[in-house]
Image 1 (cartoon, rainbow, N blue to C red):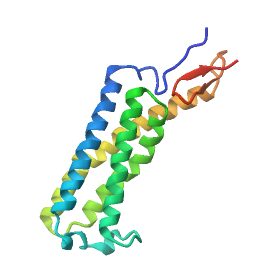
Image 2 (image 1 turned 180 degrees about the horizontal axis):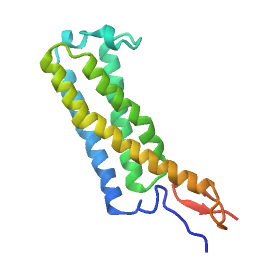
Image 3 (image 1 turned 180 degrees about the vertical axis):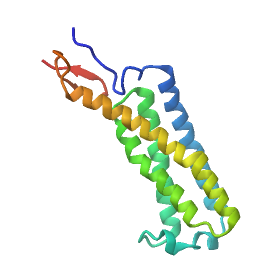
Length: 172
């Protein structure tokens, strides 16, 4: 009898993985609120400092900042909802979100103009942004392992493929 696997490995149905999905969705809501508050409270001069260190070619620093934070929120939200549902897309959204959090940490550190801002940026990077990137990298790794297992036939088992609903379907 062929064994079927969950989209992110044998423990995808566990409450811990589902809770992680909820935590990521709550994190997306918190990041969204934080970005709105920060964007409305910073003086315009704060957004133009150290532009040369983090220049991306976009026309304005505010646009760069808004795009990165919006993509982070979207990545957390999609990954969290997909994890909660046990959907295969969680691995892809997590993998795409990892560099965004690393980039955000780099932007914050590189655009710090005072020693206090630098310490705050380093603290945010070490305590929030890089650990979030690590959690998302782990989710992407789970998904990559599950996809590899689905594509490579096991010892005498029928090959499995991912269906659009995120479940493995036995072939053969």
